Amino acid sequence: METSIKKDKQCYFCLNNIDDIDYKDTQLLRRFINFYGKILPRKRIGTCSTHQRKLAIAIKRSRVMALLPFTNK
Image 1 (cartoon, one colour):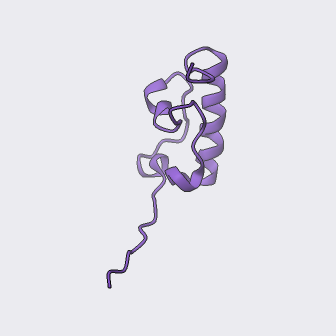
Image 2 (cartoon, one colour):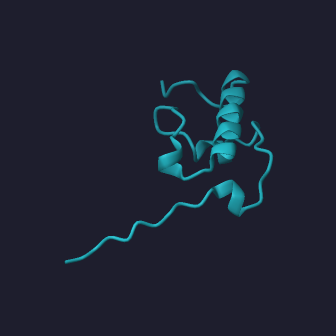
């Protein structure tokens, strides 16, 4: 029998020493939203709670400034 070893996901921002998440960096923010434009949950992307909050604020600001879409269509 094969046992699957669950690998803990590392926070992308902690690994790369990124403190401030810029709402103008749309290439980075697109990694953390799905096809429909929804913000992906912490469980799925592995960010820590501090960076997940900052990420959500940055994505929402980017949407208001029309840099990211609210929805796909």
